[in-house]
Image 1 (cartoon, helix red, strand yellow):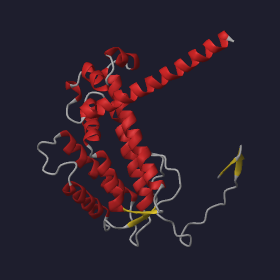
Image 2 (cartoon, one colour):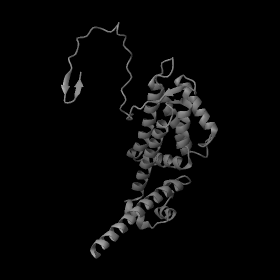
Image 3 (tube, one colour):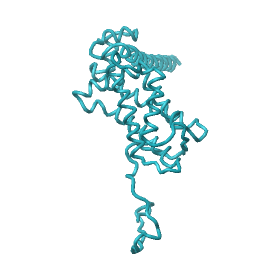
Image 4 (tube, rainbow, N blue to C red):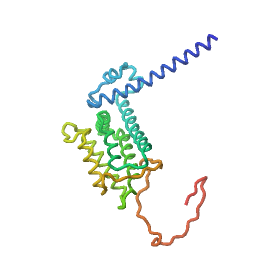
Length: 255
């Protein structure tokens, strides 16, 4: 009985230790977000991050090779979290959302001091390492594709997906500018002026009212994999073509 009891105790201790490590990793991420909200990444030392997280420098190096590795993981986790929260927001909606509501949600989330600090650090790191921008680019692409799918068919006037994507680019460009140069920015990230102005500018660029409603479907969206826009073909005017015979490839029918 004693060996079994000892094994059970060791297993319990190991489980507690792993739980402590998870909490410590979360504390390090939280510390990074809070510090980057008020300081540039190059001015934040590993010792300061560890102190803010209430752990040792050794605990930091146990998880991260260096400060750059830490920042990359922090950036990836931040934008992945923003994408997941957007998915949840849309999933919990009543099936519709207005353009101003959609943009307000995006702008509000990325305009927090913590996320603005992450954007600032990402852009500065990306100046010398383009790969560092990938998580942010992936998030912006996801927002653009999602917006296109929601609003492209919601108006009597045909809305081009390209216009929606351009409007999203305009919004992110303004956010980037304000995040990089907050002191000289007339409109601050957390201000109603910036929020209302960006919603109005985006709607004007698309050619719709900000309160236009878009339909939310349960179609899975994979950023960057949406088909290119093609002009609609009138079946009466379409040239006659030889009918293609379907051939089977496994379980998928290919024309």
